[in-house]
Length: 93
Image (cartoon, rainbow, N blue to C red; front, side, top):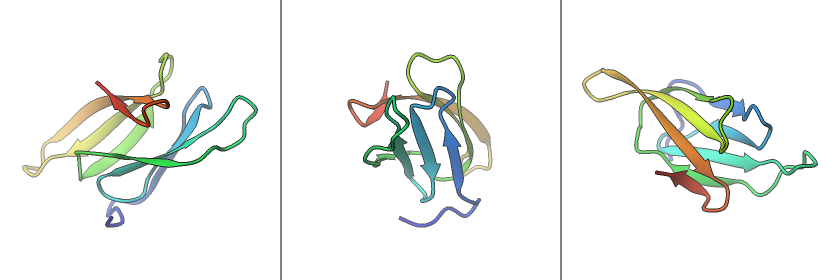
């Protein structure tokens, strides 16, 4: 993938379940963290949004959830949430 133009984004889930990285356009890398704090095998999830401005993990969610701020081709900005499934290694609807 192409490195992101807006700068790399790295955040840790508030409940310390995973680290999320946005390094390449169209991809969100997840590094799971086990209950002892050890890092597990990383995996990638495809993002539909290519012009990501920022990503934040939300607090108080049963499943890890990110809030995505992105810009569409018409330069309009939008917010979208994604819930992550560690089991499926993907976003869940």
